[in-house]
Length: 219
Image 1 (cartoon, one colour):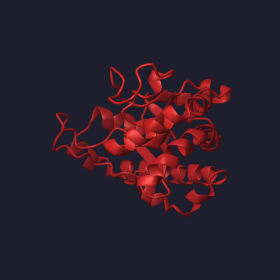
Image 2 (cartoon, rainbow, N blue to C red):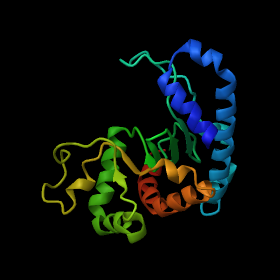
Image 3 (tube, helix red, strand yellow):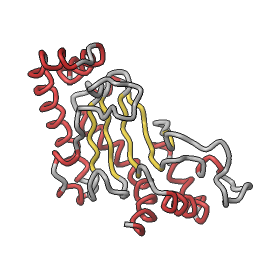
Image 4 (tube, rainbow, N blue to C red):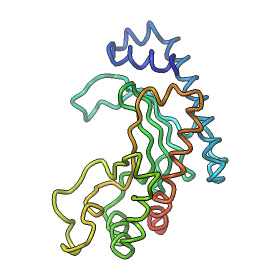
């Protein structure tokens, strides 16, 4: 983990092609270390979600090179490593398990991302149809103690077509149905980090299953 953190800290401070070329061996070593870590996390997740066993580790990883075509930030490289364990593939609407390693900004998450408007509406409709079930998932004491965050961006008002008096309006405003938990750097350096990460993901799985029950109808 130290090797991963040291490289990511330095690439954040020297995000240019020449520095990367001069330090390519450090990137290769850090990437190999993260790949091994991703494999370990996947194996622990497979203990409670056997379907992920068939997912190749290489298929859970992302390119380190940024697509800067439509971004004001022209830095050529990412500042983090991430693994997204999804039984249907990273680009599937089906939700999966995510681990993000970035010094000072590490995160564990599950969910379905970039849902089309009709699927997003269907997930919200499922919540309206089962409000107490969804509420119970998010307020399960062990999960709630970790202060999970529902969605990355949110509507300022209720989405069109949904009841204004819905008992849990905050559950319908997310633009994405993911659940994330910030973890501090010390968490990452624990000797049992992979198992602890999987333990958090296990607590988040009921939420993921709820979302996937609806999303999978559209795949």
